[in-house]
Amino acid sequence: MADLKMRIAKRAAKEFKDGDIANLGIGLPTMVANCLPEGVTIVLHSENGFTGLLGAPEKGQEDVDVINSGGAYVTYAPYGNFFGSEESFSIIRGGHVDATVLGAMEVDEKGNIANWIIPGKMVAGMGGAMDLVVGARKVIVAMLHTQKGAHKILKECTLPLTAVGVVDMIITEMGVMEVTPEGIVLKELHPDYSLDDIKAATGCELIVSPDLKRMEEE
Image (cartoon, rainbow, N blue to C red; front, side, top):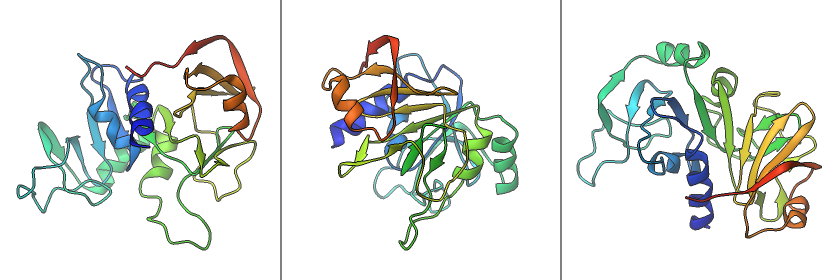
C-alpha cells in the first residue's frame, strides 16, 4: 500500500514547476513534497497561517507553536512567513495558490468532489478544502483508485459535495486522468494494469486518449 501511495505522490510531483505556490492536503498528498524532480522547489502554503512549510522536526525538537493544518508538528524554511487565518484564506481565495493536491472520498465525471464528510460517521472536517478547490488555479486529486474494491471515481458523487466542477486532474496508482467537459479522459496508464482493469475499477465511462502514454513513476 505504501508503495502505491508513493507511486501516486511521485507522479503528482511532476505537475509542479520551480517556484510554484502549492497547498498539499493531509495524508498521501503530503508525500508529494518529498518527491519533487531535481531543480524544482515549491513554496508550501498551510491554510492555518504560513508559507514555507517543511517536513516534520526531529523527535525532541518540536516547536509547540508550529503545526500544520492537520495539527502535526512541522518545520519551516528561512523564507517562511506567518500570518492570520484571514490573510491565509485571502491568499487562497485571491487565486494565489498555483495548485492544490488533495485526497477525496469520491470524484465524478463532472469534476465534482466529495472529501469532507460521510453521513453518520465521525470525520476530521473539511479544513480548508472547500476554499482550496475553488481558489487554487489547478486542483489535483491524488488518491487510491478504489476503497476496499468500491468505486471512488463515479458518474455522480453520492456523498455530500465539497464543491462542484472543480477537479482538473485525478492521479491514482492505476493512471492519470483529466476531467474535461466531455468526461474523464485517461491520459496515462500504469503498466501494472490493463485498460480493462482500470475501466472495471472506475464507476463511469473513461474516454481513452488517442495519445495514451505509460504512467511513469520516476
